[in-house]
Length: 569
Image (tube, rainbow, N blue to C red; front, top):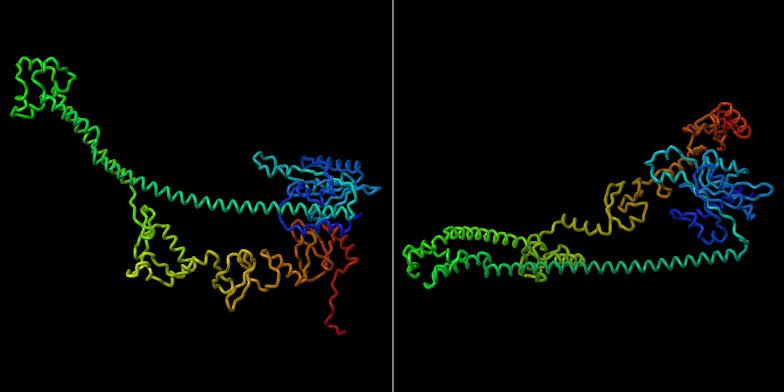
């Protein structure tokens, strides 16, 4: 049977060495490959619980498929994170199940992937049930997450070999052609996506610049509108007094003027209670003791005056004065609040000496030392241009333009400040490291640092190499290094000629005595031969151990032959 040959297993796992990515692929994704979609025929997909009943149904399904198509069939059983392939091989006179397991299993095939052959359905079901079992108490909790519930479910994809010969050159030529066309299609889509991404990136950059320009224009327009509104409001307040006070004042003066110029022919009964001039004329007489106002009025009889006296209410002049006083107080408060609001809305401005535009005080940038003021955009542009020209120290542009002005901002160049400036500039494309051997610092390129795994100290008299991940200094740079120490342990085992336990792969060293070794790892209980490395038995029963030792060491060496150095040859 070909599946029992070691070369068959190597050919099966050969694709793993060519597949470098760690991305997870579903069975449907793998089936889309030309080599599989032309050689395999997908029959159906079943889902069920991870128990013996579901496995029995899947095995009966591939058995019926093989009998119908007269070819071997397979079911790919998936239960995250396990994927098992079970074949039904037609090998007259006996048909067998071959279960391919890519993971090592202690006690069954501890060395790696293997085919497990079963001649009966019951034996195959028992193996699958033991392999894909789960803790049912884990699902008893109602609050368990849905990822844990997937442990109790399996899926089975049933396949059968396609019709036609797959060993001729025409088949492989067709498969190669399909794979090449699909690869070209993927490359074309990738190029289109890359071009589209570049176009979108350029559009986003242009839109961002437009937004920044519009925001700047909007801020400038808003500041100008606020200044114009403040000036207009102030001018209106100076030219026009309060409307209510003006109306009341005009009404009062009109009432007093109308009373003083009242003609003498006016009949006493022509006035009414609702006419203000009939009730307010007494106010001037009370304020003028000389009687000038009464002399201007026509001489009327005391009877007529007594008849009109009850119609006049002496309280309105007092009410008017009180109302006028309160209105003046209200106007003063309103004017004061308006000025406060105006001061809050009005932002002080300054004139930039570089661009000669007016800007808000919030946009000011001052130079230390000379205290020249300019807008932030001009300051940013000046600093950027000086850095591009690699000019140090960066001096004030206003002081630089004025040759007769002594600029104090350029006279303070200290070594410490220059070092800080250099560090800030270098940090954009480099990173500072400290050697773990000589404890000295140096700068390395940021891109090279992200690509390299081992760092070499460039300083003289050092040149030590250490791991970037674990910061461990390497004694032998040519030897393979692993952060967890597995490669170093492997070299130590080879150097000391230690042996590994075939059950749990734990290294063991024989100090003296016979070659019968017992693994002391918990749950292992493996007895092996230190001379050949083979497993003697896996048990903790003395009788079984003794029988296994007799069987093994009857054909192997139990004691190493040590030459007697005391006896001359």
